[in-house]
Image (cartoon, rainbow over all chains, first blue to last red; front, top):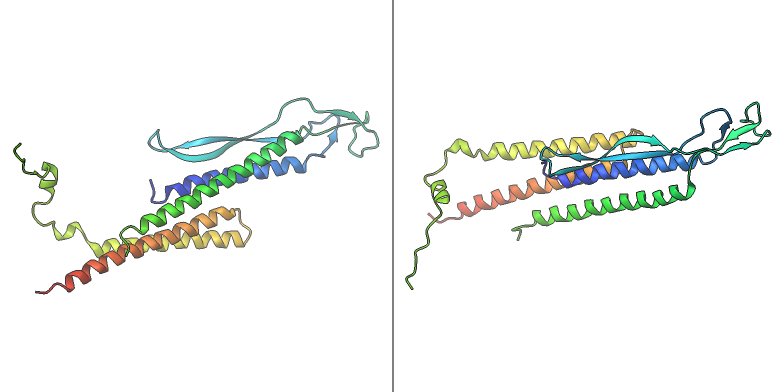
Length: 136
Length: 96
């Protein structure tokens, strides 16, 4: 256990939240990415996060991104022969991105980032108070 | 009701018998280590700041955490030094 372990724990969560925000940004950026009808569509990325365990099993060390998986489900295959991406039969596949779900996740990710910044702020105040013990 | 004398617990009693060996607490080495550790923390913060400024993969929060840690470690070292100097001055003021 290092001297300022709260910072490391909150830092790991900040990194994870940042990664989640980036991923949601990527998904939203590809909201209109169509592909030819015979290809795999763009699928929203989903972040898998797991806790980091310390040497002592009861003591957590934060959180880490362990995997990024793609959202399942059927992609809308649409007849659009004018589209430059259309295949020989005139079909394109639209991406598998749930806009409502992504916006909700965006709020959660942003709140998670904010919550961990609050942890950092409180920890800093606590450490500073500890350093004031016995002063004056 | 008879008043019982207060006894020191055995463990504490054993700990205070006789002065410690001088090599046990080498204060100058300890404070040297603390200064070294603060210097390392500042070096890390510097490296992260350079990485961030030159478009590396570092995030903003990592820099802020590193600088906060360095600053707190510096404060801690200064507090330890203040206590040590205070104790020294207290002893120097002792009339003999």
